[in-house]
Amino acid sequence: MRDLDELSAWLRLTETPGIGRASARRLLAAFGAPQAVFAAPPKAWLEWLTPVQADALARPSAELTALIQRSGDWLGTTEGPPRALVTLGDPAYPRLLLEAADPPLLLYALGQTGLLNAPGIAVVGSRNPTPQGLENARSFAAALSDHGLAVVSGLALGIDGAAHEGALTGPGSTVAVVGTGLDRVYPKRHLALARRIAEQGLLVSEYPLGTPPVAVNFPRRNRLIAGMTRGTLVIEAALPSGSLITARLAVENGREVFAIPGSIHSPQSKGCHALIKEGARLVEAASDVLEELRLGGPAARSVGSAGATRQAASPTADTATAAASGDPLLDVLGFEPVTLDALSERLGEAPAALSARLLELELAGEVVRRPGQLFQRLVRA
Image (tube, rainbow, N blue to C red; front, side, top):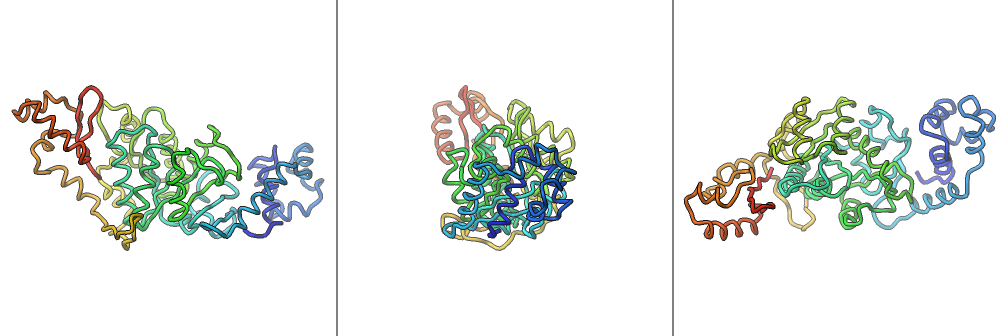
């Protein structure tokens, strides 16, 4: 959208205080387009609006006028990634989102808008994940992206960020659905990641420019993550969590839900276990997701962010390798936290010697040290 009159009409309709989405939809159904709404006399709106609403719509505030100008300037910027305002009737609007409940009337987009209608999978999870959860998010997202799926997540700390990073290494790329205006980045720690996504993937928001991080907006944006994808994969989630909200919304939209199981002792596994009990597909490898979605082999290779061509890994190869590593210590360590004394007993070796070997494996990213001098093996999806 580049026409300032059209932009002004859309923003007046959607951002006038007191005019909710339901009222805006009624006016669009009656008049056909925002410009037609404002071409009609205000008294013609009274069949669908209260007098107070009609008066507010007829008299745009100074704040709304400034937003229209700011949005026009933002859309008109030619430097950097492409910018777009995609409305409900636009061919670029996500088709799957049209089938979901309560689709937004417009979307702000920064980056590759073609990803709005690419085959997508939501990958979500805890903001406070375990090291294994972070590794799973990166490796699963990379494998799914290698097979041409756009990985959709929410740019939050933890699983979301790791999923975006993994997906950027493959041709499917990634879409970040955010809860602020696109002229802001939240959390600030993901500023560099957001810039990479804008260059190589897509940032999307239903919120106008200047919208700050407000708590209520983040659960609302989850309906977009669930609605514009073919399924939702939950990596780790506590009880309760925003990830479970996304999974519930996916079910309500008739989409698939996948969950990775974890330790029965980990609070971050409780949400995934609950989903599996309720019928979510238990996932051990990316191939489980691909099979359920009836997708075939890997897509064409792409150049990753490091500049070297990345070879698409078999979604089950790393898991199979981990199951029989050839390293006796790794083989007896397993994927549940275990004490040094227990490892010493299993291998019949002195704790001092094992401690040195565990440090080497920890530095190599094969083992993680947990509180209480517990050790746990990492597995890559």
